[in-house]
Image (cartoon, rainbow, N blue to C red; front, side, top):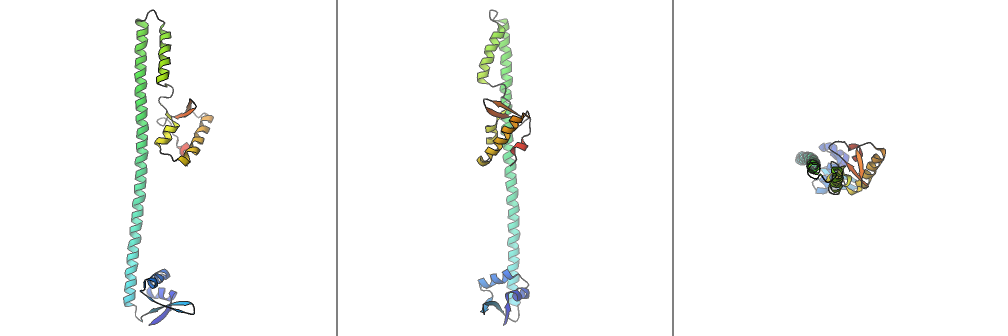
Length: 206
């Protein structure tokens, strides 16, 4: 039976000091305390205990490798989730723009038909006056100035921006409106943007 310090035992078994302390806590190694100093009591030959230590080290290494592999997998899945979410949000924005474009084309066709009717069949009426009335009706139904644009509120909702970040982002957009960079418009005191035509990444950065 040999008595060694923790450091000596670590060197003897070719492991770390922490590994020696773990073995002591598990009872795999005998511990002796003399004058406040902790010693390890080991057999004169280290075959059995050393084999156990090697086995423990291999198991620990395996666990660490598995943990690293799982961390990499989690990182990959998080990136893939974010990519799919951004892709879905962009698809929703594009679909909305397509629908609004369809309505715009439909209203343009309807306006042409009404103009023909007013010109050819309503001879007693002033065509320009008729079209002014049509425009007034359209203004109540479709806002032709912003129909290709998305409100900032809807855009941030589609982007799933966290509430704590919305205030900072809105402030940036308001400043951009004041600078009149052309990417934003104001309608009814609301900010509108067109993500299909302009890049807003500089205003969305955190």
